[in-house]
Image (cartoon, rainbow, N blue to C red; front, side):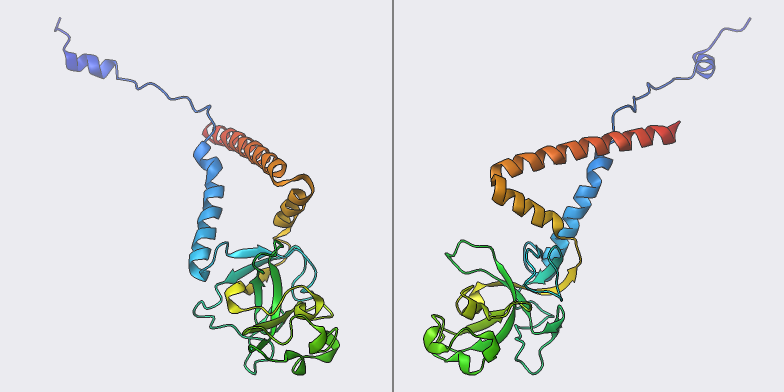
Length: 239
């Protein structure tokens, strides 16, 4: 009888690698959608030149062109190829969100309020009685009765499309210089901003810390459920 060689033993008893348990949920697959959304937001911010690259509309002051709860993509005020700022009074004003002229996001320094999302009505120069060029139906008084007139510096008179007065006549803001403008609108996505509106409302009512804790908890719960679901689906496909 011929002796058994090591090569024969290997043929009869093949080496088997230990199997790795697949019971753990696929964490990478669970976080992939969130990473994808973040990458899209970062790329969009790089293209439009502002961060964040969108704002949620929190009021109805710009209806009907933009409704409360819409999400608006914005770009830097001087970003190419969209050109410089243009007001509704300009002869070659582009159409933005249902009307002529740029719709901008601006904030009054030191006011402590939320940024304002309104249309540029017309530009003004320092020392100008801008009420002479304004629509009288959108004024609450003449230049002597308005604290914003004459214009203390170069800037813009602004207004929400649905509002009955200019911001500078309604006490919303003084004349808006270009330095206060954080961005201008490109287009709106209907109803995509309701999440942000709801978060802001909760923060105003319950406080930022409490709202943040709840959001972190909900995010963790959603991530855990997503990982569990993906893990079960993966095991089902491998059976």
